[in-house]
Length: 607
Image (tube, rainbow, N blue to C red):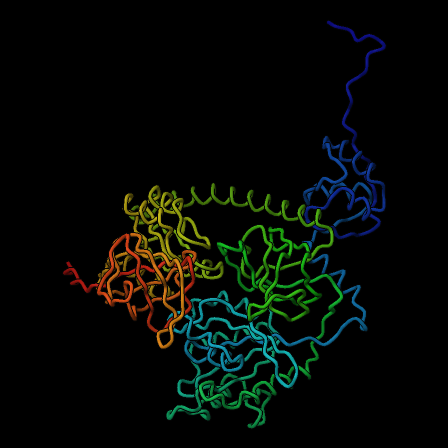
């Protein structure tokens, strides 16, 4: 047996800290750095590092700690720590630091809600004097838009939320950032299911409701019936002795729009909305997308403080630095005060619609928080994947005959991705289970097709197109890609596929594809695109699809097809030609014109 020599050192024993009585309470944010924790504990950073060493954790002064470890260490210094998110911590500081003299009146944020096709976008359109509704698929709003309107010299920020029930999620998001809800009810249609839903959202958000009774120009308009229906829902109109402001308007004839703005400003005056423009900005992401030329782009509503070019910020688990900002008309902004919607460039990834935006002075801290959150999300995703697989396996074994319909969803903006995924998963039945294996914003890529091929999935493209190589690969791998621009069509198609009733009444055949090399304007004709036919052919009577950065921007017909000065009926691959489109002039160099025909095919006989 070996004996230790008198001079030899004994192995170190782990130090067990003595129980320290709790004398104070502190709040710490997620992913707190050791330096910050020492400041909160009013002790030296090296003492905190020593306590961590006693626990067998080696750390440096700028290292971040996870929540349980930070709480443990705080307890050894006699402090009881509560963990809050960084945004909550900033909010607490704001409440403490905002002096009454720093607060100034801000524009009200007004959310326009109501049933599908009751004229919400047309009303905004009339107020804004632009033409948004004409550019939307089927005249239906598919994502959140934010606009500023000036009435009586004062600004009003409007948020246009989609009206169809499939967009409940996005509409709820709109209600969370709003001060006033304008409820649009068509005078000829009255209160409908989505109108009730909008009222419930407004009540849940505890915001005042102004009712715009639209379409009073229609011969079958019955505004009094609408008022009776409102009274039945405890929204008693003011002229009947109640509290609800109602305005009879016509978006088409631009009637009583000034009165509507006046009423909104009157409600604003009574509520006295204020914010502190001197603070670091905070706000909410209304919409986000991946733009091929500009990278991740987010529509942000600034709710407090002022957002400026060069500001570092975190949004969810994503770091960003404001590289450029644009207003609702696409004009550059240097700063965005409270209640301003701005399109922000400079994010490292596409955030989720509804995420909080918080500007942080310390760029290093902003990056640290983003990295910490990304790590947590990765861990949660890994845990969820492992658990879900076992549950699915168990469920399938128990059911014995459950069929799965795997889907890959790609859409133009993040908000649409979420809504589609949630809507389609809800269609699952006892016999068929819908499983979304991947969902994201952007064009359909080769990796999407490979994933679909490996998992036997169907790809749903919403307002996006497949990349050229992805189309070729899909044909090679026989992957089914379904492309849509209106959400109802997607849900209808999936429902039919689930019950085995997918009877294709129209079949689309691709004819050819042309690249736009140049554009020029001709009097009485409009914009003519100088094109090179890349493959197939383009004929005078074919339908066309104009694609920009893999996103469909227009579907229509050819107005004229020319080679040199001659009108021709078709142009084949490798040839140049001039194409002008019917009722559409916004063609740009780099666009792609796809020609196709839709042929009616007989429905297969049902068994």
